[in-house]
Length: 375
Image 1 (cartoon, one colour):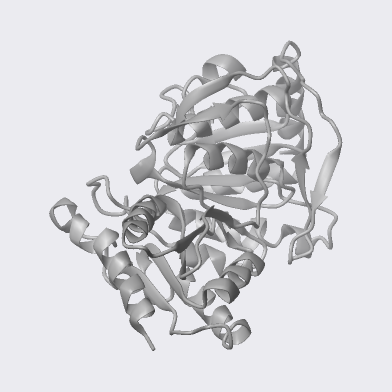
Image 2 (image 1 turned 180 degrees about the vertical axis):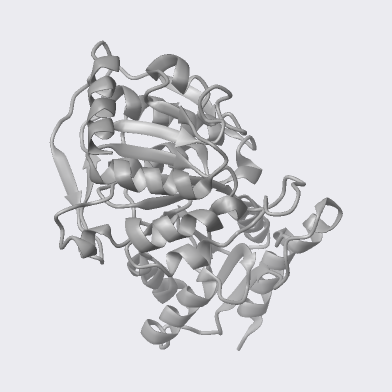
């Protein structure tokens, strides 16, 4: 296997000889609460073009950029090469970088994850795609038992710089196993980062950071908003920080926390509340593991109230972890109980009843009104 990997690495270097290597620049090391350092480029490409992108196109743009500037990056998964992925997130990568760097795999999630672990420990940076989050369970042994433990198992001798991309969540009228939101399961595992973008710009910047991170990152893509709206993306290779919340709207009366596709509904709620004279601070959590509790605690200290909204089932969700930490560290700042808005404790229903399952504007606004009315 080592010989095959060495051959692959040599082929990769030959395949990108003519590629623009770009400025490497200095590296800025961002410490995290797990004492693991992520390397993020500090210098942008000054000649970069700005492009109007959908979220799925921003992911494609980030993959193109990193593969052009880092010969060790490879992409693998079901239908990612010739077809460009089921959602076309990997479109044209094979044409530009060749079949030795963009690999179509069998329908075997365990193989995809296991191969990625092997590649990552031998100097490559695999970006693996699990076609839908509901298909990940066959891959969990490799992700949990090997990728997440590699640094600890080898006492730092080996790291595992791999990214596992997974479209997740409901809202596209998909069949069974295609609409899961089981991010809490992954966030429970030591050694994994769990990252969820909620817009095109954050998808671009966070994916670049995830690929450059020396440890495994689970990158969950909210497929319901893959093509919801566009943003201007400067394709300069600038990464956004991992392990950091993003404050999308500042407010004084209440803090609203969410992530992924539900950020769109939260933005609508913030606008409706503003029309009624209510000031809502909206925070995109973005990285679910490790949590940026410093930003959340600072916001709640200011507003005194908090609502957490997520699409996943309410029981055992990440919202419960955030609420528990608020109870531990911000109890004296709270003026009302923390309320959670989540999915039901059922399997995601089929298309006809999918809208009844997904939390929406009405449910989120009702929770805000309840919290504001307390006391």
